Image 1 (spheres, rainbow, N blue to C red):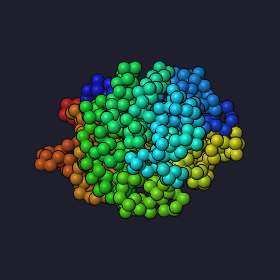
Image 2 (cartoon, protein in one colour):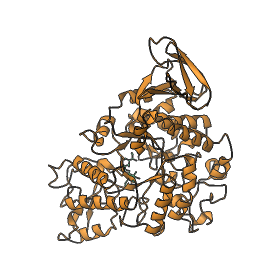
Image 3 (cartoon, rainbow, N blue to C red):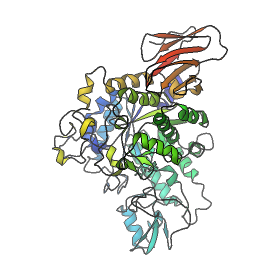
Image 4 (cartoon, rainbow, N blue to C red):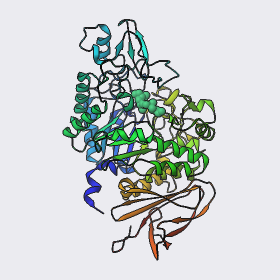
Length: 557
Ligand code: TEU
């Protein structure tokens, strides 16, 4: 296995961990998580085995969209700490070998950003064209607001300016005008600032909306993908190993264009929403077919590009790419009550409560996360099986304080629960039952399983680098797939049924003789495929990982 390639694109074999500073650890006892607290937990994260941290927005914000409404791109929200704290955190993370990426939220600002205040103040403001103003709302694009519970249009009239402005999200998040060169210059300046402070790249927020030029006068000739190509070129000049992970929630054939039409000259990584959504359909049906079909239909991607896979993220579990009937199947299985649903398209729950705490089924989902082709992205608290607090409004139900121990404030803060920035989870998935401290010492805990799985995933770069093949398992409940990279083939098998299964997986049709495979999760055990057929017994919701032995090479330890 080529050692050069496994290291030269760190993000292709990374294990990314997304967290929100204000719900991770409160070091000064004011009830709000802070950068000092996060710094105190860097060793925990290094010990968990993740290799890259993704920080959700931490810049100054009125907090009307949990920080995705920024008022100063070049500062740290004083509630969370200072730029000095941030640099100390970066140094600590780097010292432990962790990469750090941060959200780049430049589709819009907060309406309280000085730019917007200046822009609405008058036509002659230097910031006037930082935003998209019209005398009347434009007919195009026909975009619907992303948050239909709060907005009925993507245009709002500003009384002071006497004009309408564009906003794809909340009306307090006016879209920046990416057709304006000064805006594009400023985006590069923002990226350059944080790269200089040591970040290793960005999770680029709401990319399709960022590139949407409909409604912008004079943007007809603009190719918005040039913006991504320019950003990629700029970021790579400043830090050749920096990564751009794009949030792009689109169908596969549209999604793949955001890697860049000229052999991957735009975003390095893309969130794979289609695979995530079909995975939930397969999990709901207890049938592998929807996911197997979606994997087979995945388009080719440029050589040095990568899918970013996830089970849950900080937003709703969106099901907007499924058909209405399919969505209803998933709603019935995992979000049966109205209060669990949001925007008529998603579920505002974390995974363990959706699975009624079934530990085997939970492990099945995260085994898929770690073995599907791409880079796995964990959302904080998934490693211990945290639940959600549906009493917390909207999408924030899944963004509750990290549960470190069984204290009523979850070990998140020395403040009393009533003082916390956001209430902890209550009930069976709350800190009394689900917390880091209790699981650290328990051999059969989810946390212990996660640490082992993450370690094995990092030792198996074939899953991150390899070419996918969906194999015939002979059983519609069982997904068998392999990833082949250079001389090595690894295999993952997942049983979506609660019932045990015996399957015969065709590894190599018409093969002759025996092929030995090392079990990657049950170290030391070996299975044999006779004439290319591997017969296996799988537990209900069982999962197995293997590496085929290579002639003349040492076996997997
Ligand atoms: O979300 C952008 C976005 O498009 C999501 O609404 C996504 O489409 C949805 O989750 C899938 O249906 C990003 C952030 O993730 C979100 O938290 C912010 O509220 C939003 O941008 C605005 O910045």
